[in-house]
Length: 380
View (cartoon, rainbow, N blue to C red):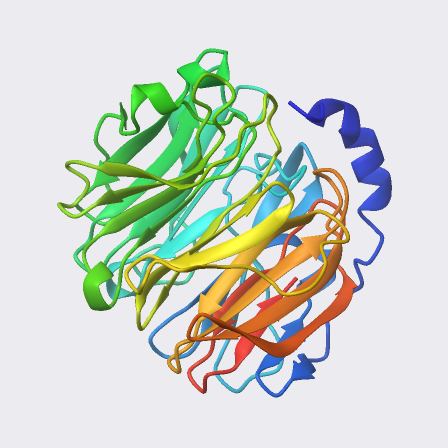
């Protein structure tokens, strides 16, 4: 591993206040198609989704890095302000938020029900909750799995048929012995199957790298389930990889997206997004960020210009005009949020529309949604 996470916690606590101002009065326009909006009250690690009504849903982390909380806010279409924050976790102080692979992940399922997952330290566990039947809050959290080998947060995907899929990677050291696991529900998250490994044994899983899951919602991706993760074959082959299921999670294929040979964990993240062309995946390799539309030509794209610092923690979104926004942070190590950068692509082509913004808070990332009018909202 390139960095010892626990040793960096004290520094992280001192630095978290930097750049974490209070609520924003509204989005800041960076471009005709790109605006930027701060989380409430210095929040970090946002995850954002857009529902069919144009409402933005966000979960984010607040509090002590090793024992904080998840909060949930919404922003209705046309509104400038966030809703009043709600707690997601029913037991306070049970969320890890030390860096970009932590915090919560969420998915929208049948009837607009929100499903959220995260993990905690101490008695290490992967935790889950969902919105209640009335949609007014969250049900009591419960553990899906736990034990040793938990280094990065889980991910969740859900569809309109009531299926909920939760993924994480774990296993005994070395990383080549780890695997991606799945627990699935067919009743909107009321009950889950016994967890089982779904990734090839030979590929391993990089212990401190994030994974991201998504249920395809359009085009040739509809009905498929995707998981982007970093492998660790032979503890050296740390390729970005993609698991895909076309049969409701019964079986998964596995493919290499981008090779990277390194005998250490880079502590990297990945993201998936639905769009009119299907699913788009973004990742980092050797300090540069990339994206690829899985079912639309399979062309890999990356930002234009000279690489001056490590590009990391890519977020991606695609609008109805088939335009793609890629956002990331430029900065050293795993803990720094880095300077915010963005690049707009037109149907896979790099455009001249790109720019920078404020410093992303320490231990945080950016999130993006493509709004109904085609504009992109970046949340940080």
